[in-house]
Image 1 (cartoon, one colour):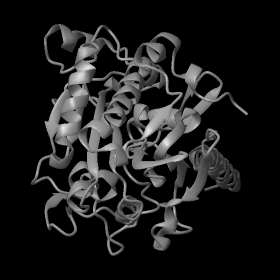
Image 2: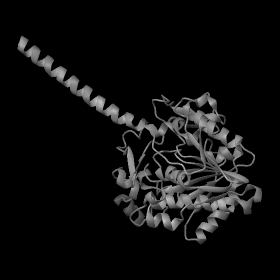
Image 3: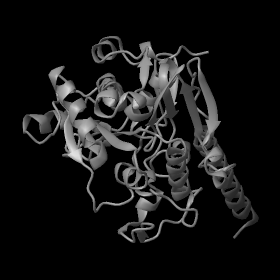
Image 4: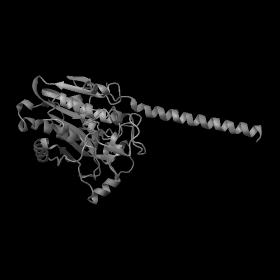
Amino acid sequence: MSDYKFKGNALTAILLLALAGGIAYITAQDFMSMWAEDKIYPAEGFAEHKLSEWEPAIANTPADTPVYIQEGSEPGGTVLILGGTHPNEPAGFISAIMYLERAKVSKGRLIVIPFGNHSAFTHNSPQDAAPQRFHLGTRTFKFGSRASNPIHQWPDPDIYVHYPSGQKLDGSSRANLNRGYPGTLNEGLTQAASLAILELIKKENVTLAFDLHEASPEYPVVNAMVAHERAMELAATAVMELEFNGIPMRLEPSPVNLRGLSHREWGDSTEETLAILMEAGNPSQGRLRERTDEALVLTGRDKAYARASKLGRLFVPYEEDQPLELRVARHVTAVMTCIEQLEMVLDESKAVTVENIPGYEEIIAEGVAKFLAPEA
């Protein structure tokens, strides 16, 4: 090979390596941009804490996440709203943030954890071409992943053995916060986060606990409350009230033999807590969806789902869309309806009074951004 050809090949290799390095650098910066925290603006009266206050072992780890508590002037029960168990289910954490940024508590206490799986907010789902962020007015929020970030907990096993039941699940369930309860410090980051959340529920004597989710429209348990048996009376009363007001809501019992989920383990691990998980219908969660982009996240408008609806294959009413306003309105209103029934189902000592939360029709008509704090 001549010196000319050798030098030419070497120069080409150097240029290609430089190009690859530049692309890797830009990609890494884009990836790492999700490590920045979303800005939130708690309403007056909320005190900020960290989840590690209830389980010190997660301090200074990606499992630690903000916890906000507001206490009313009158004693009463304690309500927990957990959002962000799955950060690619935005109605869950946006509903929690709406309570955080608006609530005025006059009786009892309200605890809000907006970003339950903190690690899962630091990346988005690989191979799904999912957006990293979505916008509500002037506000920007991350669209994370269902699973904890693999750089924080890796590798997933072939089979995940749930502690302490011994139930065997697929290996990816190890990175799912809603398969980790009651939690342990001897498994992984996700299970440690589960343990910390349950420790908070126990130590704060939580009366009523919500875990807010979204599910695909073709999934039977959608637009539903899934309630532990101890919470069934409250959930049934709330469902009847919602139905009376034109908001259809399924009521599902927590499966006794399906371990690791919040509604099962929160109830079984405590003596009094009423545990409820809520699911809203979101096409960006479904298998039938087309392009997974910000428009789909916000509007739920998808041709494949419109076709499936006409064929009767969905478990939600689908009028060509399923917007975030509708999904958030369902969660926010259902949570408030349950809170309002506490005194009747339990007794006055467990009542919690929360004001300044918009109603169902208001959220749908005026949009979610209207009821979030303005960008500071």
